[in-house]
Structure formats: structure tokens, C-alpha cells
Amino acid sequence: MSAATTAVPDAQPHATSGMALAIRTEVRKLTTTKTWWVLGLVAIAVAVLVTVLTVAGSEGSGHTPLDIFTGALIGGVQTAYMITAIVGITAVAGEYRHHTVTASYLSVPNRGRLITAKLLVLTGYGLLVGIIVVAICSAIAAPWLSARGLLGGSLTASGVTRAVVGGTASIAVMTGVGVALGALLRNQIAAVGALLIYLFAIEQTINSISLTRPAYPYLPGGAVQSLAYSGHRAFGSATGAELLNPWLAALIIVGYAVVITAIAVRTTIRRDVS
Image (cartoon, rainbow, N blue to C red; front, side, top):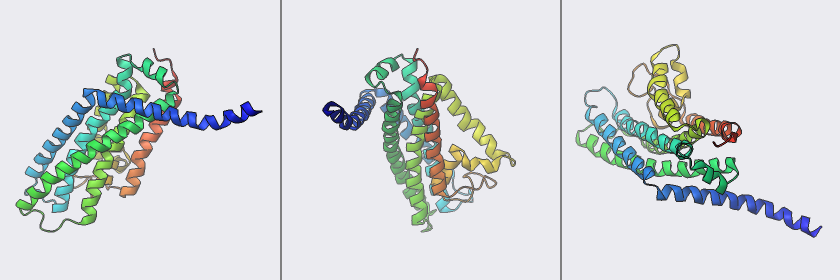
């Protein structure tokens, strides 16, 4: 009787300590591997370049000052989250490629717990990169546009807040989507290829065809624009899809990460490691 009663209280602490161990393990991998930080710096640098090019080409574009400012951020954010999503993919699929996943599953036998830990840690990594990207791109775009007389006091607090908060959150959540995709496909090259083809070709094609355009805001790229961009239509196109409410867009993006992760946990990662 006493043995049974003492075993029950231990179950929850064991699960908690198991998750804490998994998170510590993933944090250690992240902080001791140069790849993540190199790719993070690349994401920041390319995002800054895209922002600079967007602001430089904005004169005479016909967009409002708020559209130019938030559009410059959107360009940087979209570039950054493509790179951090690849980081997320590599965090899972890369372990299969380099045959280190066996050691990971031996240290954390509960595969669902391990993937959840990766999802939490890499989303935090994406949040950090997102904060830096948005801060630097904002610090470049705002003074530059102001010096050219393109702001003119027309920036609204809500529009700027939406761009800054939405852009940062987009990078974080899309990094998590990358983790989920890597867990689902397990092949790093296939997962990265699928991501790039989808974002560069499939989504853009859907947005360019009038029949399929209404579906674009519900896709990951369209939801990101809806989350961070204050314009009525997708940035860069007068005939682009009508964007969603930012709260709905946030739920959609998170939903993609949760659904893909759930499918991966229940199917793909239950297969044999090798």
C-alpha cells in the first residue's frame, strides 16, 4: 500500500524533469553549434539588405508612408523567416541526415517530448532573431524615410505596433513550422526543397491567379502578411488578396505548426530511426 502511494506522486515530477532535461539538451545543442548562429546572422543580414532595397525603391511607388514602412519590414521578415525555418528543419531532419538522432532519442526516449522540446527551443531562437531583425530594419527604415520626407507624421501607432509585433512573432512561429516540417519529412534536403518551392512558387502562383487568390491569406505566407502588414491587400500588388484580421492570422500560423507537429509525432517519428 505504502509503495503504491509513494509511486503516484513521483509520476508528475518525473514527466516534468524529463521535459526539463529535453529542453536543456536542445538549448545546449543550440548554444554549442555554430550553424544556428551563422544562419541567424545570415537571416539578419539578408533581411537588412531587403529592407534597404525596399526603402530605396519606394520613391514614386504610390504607396502610403505607412505601407512603405511596414512593407520594408515585411520584406525583411519574410526573408528572415525562410532562413530560420530552414534552421528549424535542420534541428530535426539534420539529425537524421548526420545519424545523431539515435543518441538524441536515447537521451530522451519519449519522442513526442523531444520534438516538443525542439519546438519550444527553436521557437525561442526564432523570437530572438525576430526581435533583432525587426529592431534593426525599423532603425534603418524609419530615419531614412523621415529624411526623405516620406513619413510626414502619417505613421499610426497601431500600424507600427502591428508591423513590429506581428513581424517578430512571424519569424518565431515560422521557425516552429520548420521544426514541425523537419519532423514530418525527416529528410533535410527534401524538407528544405519543399519549403522553398512552396513559398517561392506555389504560394505566389496561388496569389497571382484570380480564382485561387482568396485562399492566399489562409496560407502561411499570406497569414504572415496579414499578421504584420497594415495594408488592405497583399503588399506589392494592387490586385493582391485581401488580408485577414491579424488575430485570425496569428491563430492560423500557430495552427499550422501545431497540426504538422501533431501529425509528425503520431506518424513519422514513430517509425524506426534507421
